[in-house]
Image 1: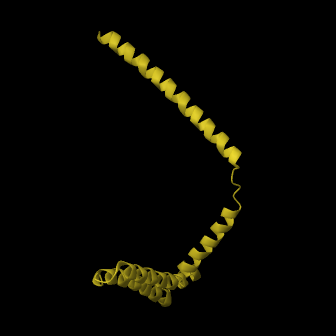
Image 2: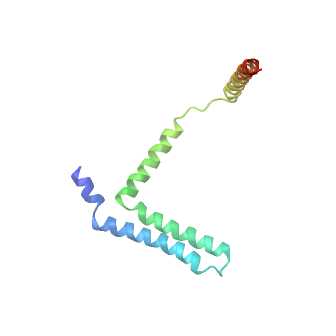
Image 3: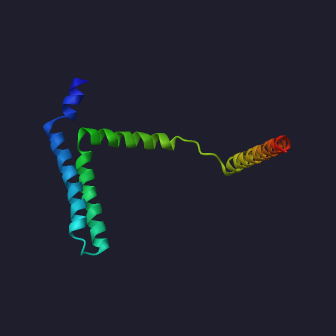
Amino acid sequence: MSGNTSTAKSPLNVLKWLVAISVVSGAIVGNQVYAEFGLLYRILGVVALFAVAFGVAATTTQGKAFLTLLKEANIERRKVVWPTRQETVQTTMIVVAVVILVAIILWGLDSLLSWIVSSVIG
């Protein structure tokens, strides 16, 4: 475990994170400084600089771990069994029926309590 933390805090990783943060900061500042340029050019510049910053950050230990996590999550996502159209429609109809039933019960309870309070108050 200590070997993992020493590589996570190695000077090269710290330098890469500083470069990535600097590139993102440069993109934000450059967007403000070059406001006279067209919006499309500024958007393309910011997207390009963010891509460079992501590329630099992805080469760090934490970045590699994050990319591994994304790959594993994608594999798990593929394993999900999605419901068929018929199952979705049936489930939706059950939910709608329960909502209507609860609404009628609450309306009846509200009417009953309103009638009781108006009888007591007079």
